[in-house]
Image 1 (tube, helix red, strand yellow):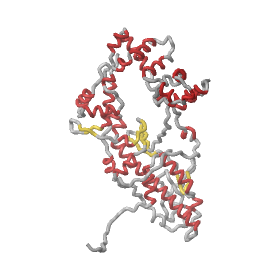
Image 2 (cartoon, rainbow, N blue to C red):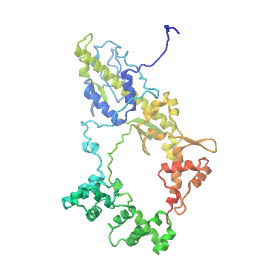
Image 3 (cartoon, helix red, strand yellow):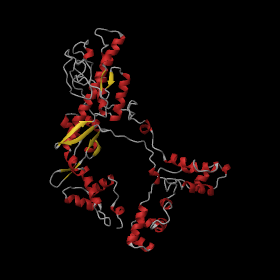
Image 4 (cartoon, helix red, strand yellow):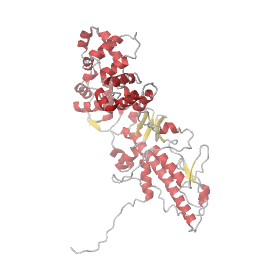
Length: 496
């Protein structure tokens, strides 16, 4: 083959930095978007925040016609003052900013987003400590208590070593011998010393900390009860000698060995069940997470209304004073800089408008499709996939995925991520479909109403669902049950 020239015609979308910005803003969560807006306000003098109680000039932020007195308010969230840019050539900016930004993209167009950051310090209601402080770790909580106890330097070093060996559940992972071996032989630390310090740590809060197994953990907690607590002695005996029978739900054997009647054994078990088998979990070490709803759904006159949360994102506009400094036919460096900043400000405002419009379209379609859920709860949730919403709004599935990720909807039933409303389906005997979310809700309802003496097995639950026209296999019921955190029937058996 010899080289030759070939002329081809085709169409493609050029991803300009402005379009990339619009797509990136679309996938940001509310907290990330607040950070992005704050950075734009700090870097671009043409942008300014609308303060509370200040009136807006409701002119179209993208209108450049000479008739600046004409007013329109297509989007109350973002506004721009145009009376100060009369010196610009008519239609100059409209040639650059399209009326609609093509934020709809395919799966392969991915833009990285930063982690959630902090809102502006200008917010009077912003509390720096609550937004930035991490939860207290179990080790720091125990070390704080250790420092309050008077003891020798050697004992304190042993105490620090023991605390380092306690896992997040509150249990001591190393044996006494292993802890002794971890010290320098010259220190001459003996097992009795480690055991004595461990007993002091086991008096710390939360109760049950530093135990080496479940039996010791329960006994440490029972030790905190007053001596006249009803059934305390029986509970201590059960935890000490018959914990395996309790774990196996062998109540008849328990009653014979402890010589208790059924009603008496039930009260002893209730005392045991009031204890925490994982005492370390009471100390929350993870950082707090904050959810700000992007969309608010409410019912008015028998109609479900969808609104953007105007409090989640600050309102922006172009600074009229700085925009007035832009001069026509001036190619100086300062004027070029201001023209570029004005253009970027207008692009940023338009990108925010496009983000809100897309979010409103998707949220409105979700509400339209899931009216049953809003009216009656999870059991009325309909099957819904990304493709259904993508077809309804005329966008790609990847765009719907970005819009529904880390975006939250406030409803009368609570705050949900938009992705919560999407679920797979199973067939019904009448030829219809039932969503997996509705099936989970039904399973949860059936388990809550079951006889505690004879809990429902997965096969029985599958039969009850089939009686309602929902064809679900036993293994599917088991999968849904596990996702709900419900134990198998053998572990749900209770002594009534």
